[in-house]
Each structure stands twice: as C-alpha cells, then as structure tokens.
Length: 495
Image 1 (cartoon, helix red, strand yellow):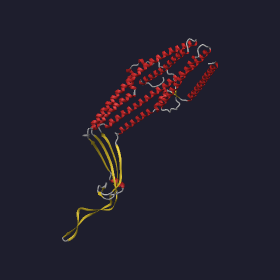
Image 2 (cartoon, rainbow, N blue to C red):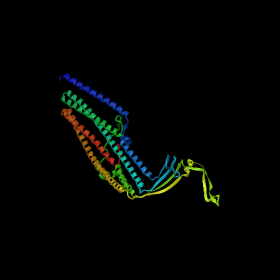
Image 3 (tube, rainbow, N blue to C red):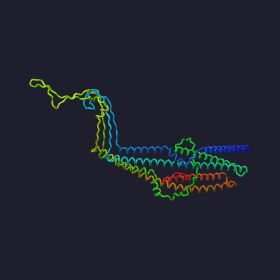
Image 4 (cartoon, rainbow, N blue to C red):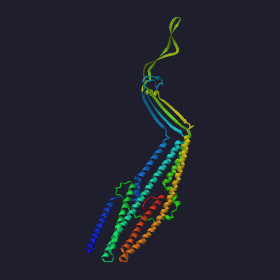
C-alpha cells in the first residue's frame, strides 16, 4: 500500500475515534441529565413498595381477609337466630279459615305475621371447636402472607444486587474501552517511530471492538435486570426507574465458616412464617376431629315464637241480645208458653267484619319450646367423617415435618453456598492481583518492544476476565450473606 493509502486509512481511523468520543460524551451527558431528573430508589424503598403493590402479596392479604371473615362467621353461630315472616293472599273454594279453623267455600282474604327466635344450647362442641379451628386457619393465612412478603422481598434484593453487579461490570467494560483506546494511541506513536509493526495496531483495534461488545452486553444485562425489578414492583416497563448505588463492601463480620446448622436452624424456627403456618394447620386439623365427633352427641335448642292472623271471613256482631228459651206446650187442652230453665237464645245484632288491628290483637299467640335431637343411626357418616378428620391431621403433621426438613436442608445449602462464595471471592481477588501485576509488567515490556501486541492483549484479557470474575464473586457472596440474614430474621438492607 502506498503512502497516500496509509494516510487515508489513518485519517479514517482518527475520524472514527473522534466520532466515538463525541458520541460517548453526548450519551454520558444525556444519561447524567436523565439520572438527575429521576427519583432514586433505595433497596428499602423497593422492598417496601413491593410489599404494598406486588400482586402475589395482595392475593395473600386477600386470603387473610377471607379467613378473618370466616372466623367472625364462626363466632356469630353462638348468637340466636331471629327471623320474621309475612304472608298475605286470597283463598278460594273449600278452604279453612285461618282465624276460626272452620271450613267454608267463600273467597277469603288472609294475612299472617310471625316472629321466631331460636338459639343452640348444646351441640356437642360444634360451635366452640369451629371457632377455634377458624382462628388457627386465620393465623395460618397470616403466616402465609408474611412468607409471601419475605419471598418477594428476597427476590427484590436479588434483582437489586444484580443491577449493581451489571452496572459495575458496565463501568469496568467502559473503562477497558477507554484504556484500549489509549493503548491504541501509544501503539500508533510507536508505529510512527518504527518500533512495532502495523499488525500490532490491528490487534489492538480488534481488542477495542471486543471491549465495546462487552460494554454493549453489560448495558443489555442492566436493562434486563431493571425490567425484572420493575416486574417485581408491578411497575410499567417504560417507568424510568433508577436505583441507589451505594458502596457495598463485604461486611467485616462476615464469617460463614463460623456458622453451624443447629443455632441457625433454631433461630429460623422462630423467624420463618412457613414453620408457623404449618404448626397452625396442625392445630386446625386437630380441631377438625372434635368437630367431626360433635355429630355423636345430642343437640339442644331453645325457641320462641310470636304470631297472629287476619281473615276477611272473621266477623263479629255489634252486640248479642239474649232471650229466654221458650217452648209452646199444651196443658189441659190449653196452649201455653213454657220457659225452659237454663236455656237462652242469643241473637247477634249488626254482624260486621272485625278490623285488622283488632283481629291481630285477638289472634296474637306466643309459644316457647325446648328441642332435643338425639342421633341414633346415621348410616356411618359420622364415623367416616371422624376417620377423614384423623387423616387430615396426619397429613398436616407430615407437612409440618416436611416444612421443617426443607428449612433445615435450605439452611445447610445456604451455609455451604456462603462458605464456597467466600472462598471463591478470595480466590478471585488473588487472581485479579496476579493478572493485574502481569498486565502492568507486560505493558512496560511492550513499551520497550520486548513483547508484541498479541502478548499484551492476552495479558489484558486475563486481567479483564479476572476483574469480571471478582465482581461476580463479590456480589454472589453478598447475596449468599443476605440469604443467611433472611434465615436469621435480619432486615434486608445494604448495611
């Protein structure tokens, strides 16, 4: 290639570098302005917002409200039942007058009202144990809701830490692009001085392209991590969310090697809602046995009834005239009138329908009663119900044991993962220190022409990979520590 070709190529590369710098500066300025206008969310705010808006948590809260209503309904069974009835109509043909209980064939209008009240005095403990069972069910629902809150909070913390991880990786990737561009400038000077061949420039340009590709991939990971966090918070995908970027060091007291299963497990038994929920369901199933057995016992109830009737056929005279009862007799051939002692004739005068409220007053009746129902034979239904209740208790106890065993296994895994993450983080730090020293040494040797660009690029890639591994190991270790804090009942924060 002639000198003009080389000059054109150098001008093209210079123009491309200038364009990249201008584009990067504008993008950085735009992002800075956007970040300044956006509200920054801390981890605590993200967790609190998720607890108030996540659909899974809302569903769990709705289940709690349902269980509260069920408990209230069970308690109201202790109160008396009061009902009123009202009947009105017209009857035709051969019917019974509801006020006189006599048969007639005339059309009759009727109206009856009544008030009934009854209360259960004894039912084998059905109401008592139903109230206790609904109380245990309500406590179990509350524990389930708390467990849902903890699970979502832990997912939010994981998403938050992933964003911090990918943003740190993006910062490192952009820094590596800048360093590679600086190295290209140095190489170009060395090429102009005749110290290194032109192929070194091509190798470094290829390295710049790889670094830029890593930067693009890191930004894509950030976008996906933000999308995951927005989904947990039930935010719209286009919501401009930015999280707080605190310095998150490894806690000085982080010593997973010092943790053992037994104390962590005993602490978790008192802090984990899933354990409490399983315990409450065992007690609920135990009350279910008593409820099923209540059908073996008699039931006693007390009732009160008030009623009255009205009928258009119910009539009464204004007054009743009384006359002596006399008979015509023949005495000694002479007709005479004889009054019968103790007999009289009553003649109603001005018969008319009795007014509505007067009928209601006259027909007003009251009754009280005690009812006893004694079960004798129920086709074996009660016995089968008791057997099913016993099986329900057995299943609840098995689930209780399974919950505890799962918790123990999860804690064992969490401790092992934290220990492994600690060792991996320490190893990544040592690897980064070694590769950084190797790269610095390779840079010095490259400057004096002792090695070529390929060796320099290889050392740089080793250092970059080690740096990326160290960042991943750091945040992995932090998340493993957060899981242990979760089992120990500690709040989720960046402290």
